[in-house]
Length: 289
Image (cartoon, rainbow, N blue to C red):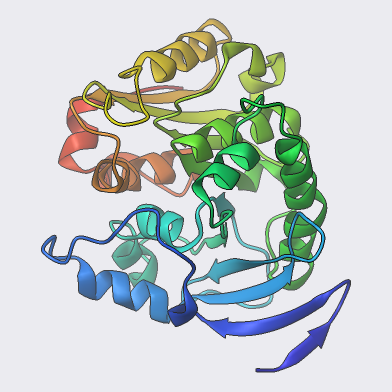
């Protein structure tokens, strides 16, 4: 490993050193080879985490054919390699071939403890934890500037977006609304704890993808598609550019993966999104300009 000194110490890592997965791979889904290729092509950096004495990995993926001398449209997606898989599994062939323009994906690892992840991702986490504010500050003041400075991430907010699923979607709603100077919109898969009060007038000038499943009520998820619908209705009242997808899927990775390709092409303005929409997107997604 090569030591690099900037504002903090960074180490280049192989993606094989993945943190704990929150979306266990299904070896029978026929996509393991593609998943392995994404991991092999991904590199990570370790630097001080949100809390004193801790470190976090931030994973970086860019197409091999991407130019190194200019900034790329950038997606910041949460939950590390799981987030990368959700974003890339269906879209990577078009990015690799050059059919779509290259993008950069930055994927910070979550807190390895499920309760810690919830506290960092969910504003107003039960118990009055201050972890959300600390994590938001870390992401905005450390991760984003690092990506802009060292990875040539986009500095134009119309070319930079946040994304997440479940509580990561809740976090993405807050980040996009709190920081319109950084982000031009968000991909929001199955938010579970979001409040419409988090959505401000600035959302009307951003682009939004919001998905929710009518079969999501299971385990810790108790409001099947209610929260996504509330978010969608609030964005509609603001006349925000919106792609909404509500249909009969569960709260799980395969659904988010299959709702991402056309949605990301639309969100990031990469081309004709209808050419990349999956069957699920074609059936259940509706887009307003």
